[in-house]
Length: 184
Image (cartoon, rainbow, N blue to C red):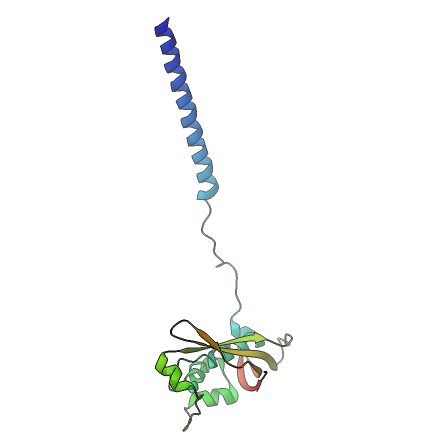
């Protein structure tokens, strides 16, 4: 009888272990089927408009690039204007084409250059959307520049309001001129 009980316990143990193993395998298969078919998220199928496809986007892209400076690498703000040449037309494109004989520099330029600071331009739309079919438009922006110091600190520069004239050239818009006013 003792041998019979031992045999029944062994059979019960084997059956229990088999049931646990089957449950684990089924759980793994279910998890793999639910997650294995998913690919990492991507928005490659989502079409993003180029910044120059709208008047507002063109104004923002141009002003951000024109007012982002690397004084340690650039001789003056004209270098940023020149780098933005593909977003410009008219008077701004002419100004970007040739370095002026004497370029006025912000008074802090030499200090920024010496310490490796970067001045980052950021813009915020301050006007209503413009007619996308108009040949020319004015876009109002708020321009903010922040000096990013090499030690990680930042210093905001005075905020300015920008009135940017943009011109449609085919399917794209380009900045033709701008006017700045201090806001504070």
